[in-house]
Length: 306
Image (cartoon, rainbow, N blue to C red):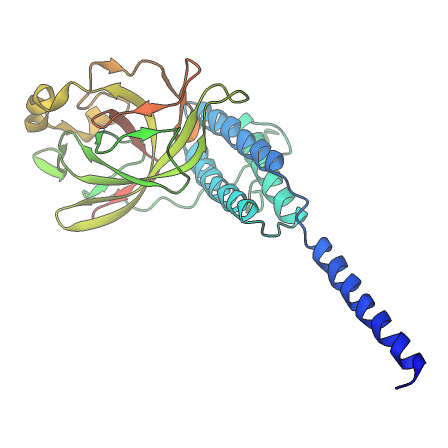
């Protein structure tokens, strides 16, 4: 082997090494945990705007809540990827951020807001901002439990923002029968499966702990049904004996919408429920929901029992 060939060999190795290093550095994500936190804060603020929209336009609010729930799930996915040091493209982050902004603009009724992710409908003749066209509502059957129906459910295990982790599962059971005339549609003791979608522990920076929970299925009479439901209130339980009379009585669908079901003694002290099911502490500590706590849960999609 000549000297020239010997000289070229280490040069080639170095070139390959530096090239690999350059490629690896190019794959390092430019998205930071601060970016993800800002995104989640934006989602939390948007959820409040969507909740306030319900009193003005319930149909649009339900549709936007669905888009926002999807965005929240994607934000959690990005957070998990960041924790695992996986690459996140800037375009992936900005696309999700822009979708959240669009949802908020629609909830606030700002002109020119584009609906996410579908194209806007042709604008209204009165000049109001465009909005997504809702899908045609299916014919209601006697087995449908409508959007907005509220259940009072009892936590089977405790939830605490200090110990909870994203994607933790938990269960809660309905306190009273849900009736339609003389029929029991959903019996007391039906099991709702919940999931923790975000957690903020109390600390020096974030003085008040919070966690976001949602329910994705309900099981009773040997069958499981998919649902989308969020927490609207946390109540102090009266205990099984105090609620026994209500369990036998039940409540009708008409009485449930916007009304009281099994009920506890009153709102749980030190807890504030925000939009999208975010449970926050009000006194500079972690959220603590002991087993037995009654949560008021609202259906964000109709429950078809067929």
